[in-house]
Length: 120
Image 1: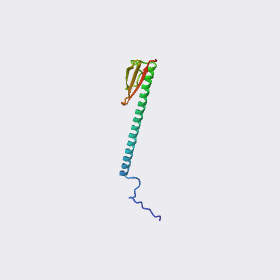
Image 2: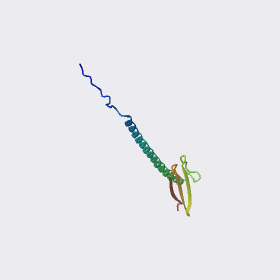
Image 3: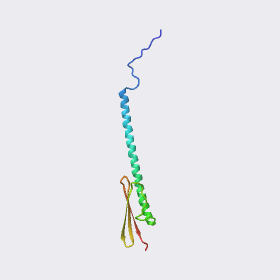
Image 4: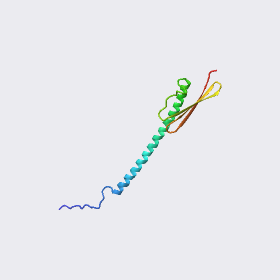
């Protein structure tokens, strides 16, 4: 006669429900932390890009004034939701100081000035 092995019914195989729930909770919390980090990183990149773009636009605007390609009443177009302020002051007899201020949608402000003097 072949001996029959008795299987211990109380022997546990796999994970219990509380262990699975705790693991799922830890996974969810970790995933949320990574998603928040990713969102902050994207916002930082967007702020940096807009800031650099604002400097570039202000510089380009002043270059176009210098080349007489645009006027203060007819400036270069800006992206949607961006704001610009142009100020021109007569400083000396033959000199003008033109200042361009550009504000991004994230409320970053760039100010760039240039002097324009008549050749003597």
